[in-house]
Amino acid sequence: MVHMTGFGLDPDALRGAIAKLKDIHEKADKLGREAMQLKPGELTAGDKVTNDARLAIQERAMADSGSARAVARELTEKLKEKIEAYEATLREYEAAEHNATIDAGRVDRQA
Image 1: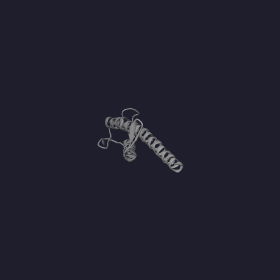
Image 2: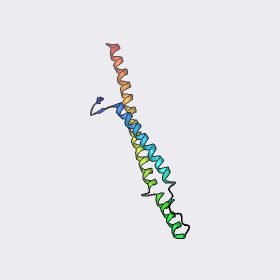
Image 3: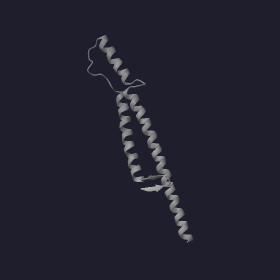
Image 4: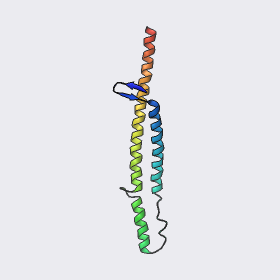
């Protein structure tokens, strides 16, 4: 773990966290796509009440708010934001490490 002013950073742990978040993101995205396919298969009678119930269940499953699809979409967006933030932090850390290495090399040559 590398300690910088004010905080410590373990780049390997951060890379691992990013990989796990990407896996969870993929699963949440898949869940959202599967929610679009939800159909109440047990409602097989062809009468109006059953057909209306089937449609109501399908509409609820795909609603813009509170549905499995909407929750999965919100989760994937939050995960995407977190992944991007972690990746940016890692890039900044790696750039700082690279610059520190270059600066250390200059100091050694000057000494």
